[in-house]
Length: 355
Ligand code: NAD
Image (cartoon, rainbow, N blue to C red):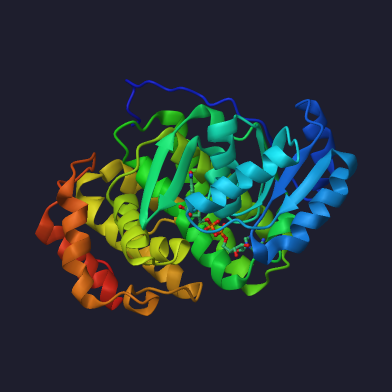
């Protein structure tokens, strides 16, 4: 039974969903009263950025194709300057968490509204969480000014997402659902979103990886990613996200792949202390008796990495990351012990099934 004592605060989000919905972007920008928006994207998606600017016509002030993982402060500074020079009154961020993160960095300082057009499953577009990286350290915070005013989910834009990143980005989204289900601030409505989000992604991802142009599968995966992003925004993340944050920040391991490898092990660690989450995930994963093992099998079916070693981590780094995981206390269903986390990381490093 759900926990019937809770506080739930909805975020003011406007979401447009569906194949071809990108055509409504000019109307969305006009609806927000914006006349000169700066289009943000990663260098790899510059062509998409220009196509979006062309669709916006006179309402586009320019394209800045400089978004990078974890928003380096110098990239954020340049983007703010560029927005100022162009007299931009808002931003349209097209891409994954990196492009949307850059839009948030501008919003944080200049208050320019962000319209997000996500093309991965990372979920940043649904959250008021920003991040900035300087000298190898990432700072994050929550601020409602960075929450996108409008989000356009167009599955057609995800067709070009390569199979490898589709699988790992989808597992990254499932990780938000898993930790949302056992979060200290879980609420009944958010738990429904988490279960349905995990279900949709687990069902769709094998089809997406088989045939990246299957628009029905792409739409179902993106629908799951939307729900999981909303869960990330509404709940406090625990051990899994802390570990991935340390692995990414300290060792520079790739974001989505790291989430994919760690998730089954983090869930196996917490499962004994989170029976309701295990029951919800079991339903979401087609009645799986052991959801942690099922997620490990899913990663295998997706051809995704399953060991930290293959992501480039050295075994000697295990104690350092375990130390970071226990350095500061945070909410987690099962007590986080040094030995427990070290064993978890060793299994994830070696690519063993979760225990
Ligand atoms: P990303 O945005 O870095 O994208 C990875 C690569 O894929 C980039 O080269 C990008 O151009 C390319 N790409 C994206 N979509 C594509 C498409 N449809 N077709 C072809 N190429 C495409 O990766 P990500 O995993 O989406 O985001 C990771 C970053 O987002 C991390 O820095 C992470 O910390 C952050 N993040 C933040 C939040 C939050 O709430 N603030 C949530 C999730 C992730």
